[in-house]
Length: 140
Image (cartoon, rainbow, N blue to C red; front, side, top):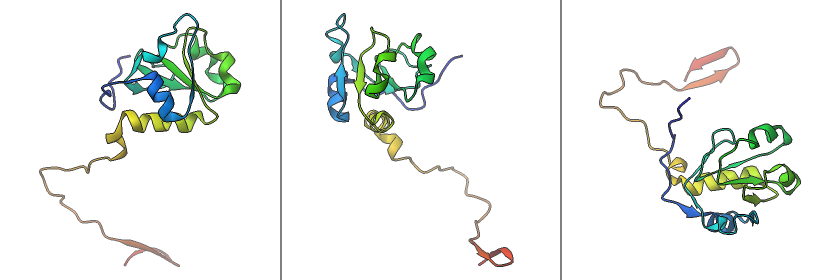
């Protein structure tokens, strides 16, 4: 199944810089000492992550997906570190979900400031405010 990126990719930030921004400890494999220089451009779920992206895990249920994960790094809690395949860099933090959300905002700042939905045609209706009264909903 092809995946279309929801947000355009970031121009890239090194994994080392991203770890510092998140306040996470960067753990790189012995076989990849330069992993901190890898450019990260986006965030993704574990099952769809590819090189240039980071993902995160919150529980042991993600173990099977980790075996085929192609992410450039994984954000996780220290208690789950042992689940991560040895070839993958880790951004270790006590708050992986928060760190992942911050990373998403850092890499995709426009997502935090959504633009209004506009159209060339004017709406053909007008929303009326509603209020709740004892007998149910009614117009105010």
